[in-house]
Image (tube, rainbow, N blue to C red; front, top):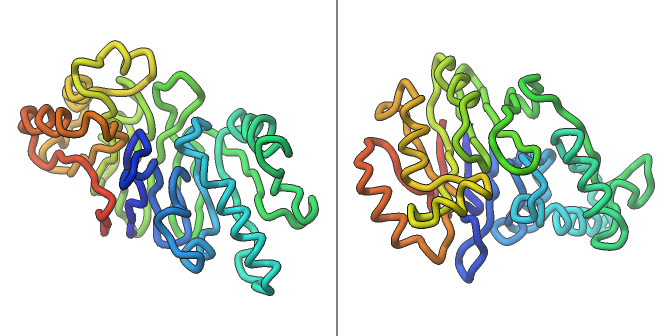
Length: 261
């Protein structure tokens, strides 16, 4: 399994891209920035997008992937005609009603027609696994103000977890502890400690918050934990606060990271 970091920040400034991870060239975990990070040909290899929740920084580039895919079709390319969006039913309904609604953006589930749309919305259920291009994916509910799931990935007997956006939570750690060959976790850490109240009400974590949650992880220090969703404006402060935790194999992701599992 190969996980390429396309964007790992919780805010967008020059040089800082929003959340998106590319798995094995064909699966996206969230879609904050893939069109900013991938060539048109690389984008055309994407067949599936797993959406954790419908906040804009995780769904923005669905719009532009669909637009680019439609132009590839018009140019005569018949491969990978459809991109399937996988999410909770309430999230797919929200995207259909408020995003792909013909007002904010064209409804690419109906373009060029309903039988052959550029996009397809596919519902999943928490903790019911499904397989995409050889990767078994299990959605896991986490603690966020809107319906949100992290994802357990499993391929060739190796597991990896992406928590997505979450405050302090429990179930995903129970599942992490149950994995026989867990190779890593991507964990939310959005705000510096001084912004704890903001983190609490927005469903995110600070370095102090992750210190509390990591106590639930039985293999802390032996399995890498990668932090994401940092706010660019406070990155220097957070870097110092994460280093002060002095936890082995804990670090913040960057946009040049590529994880080979």
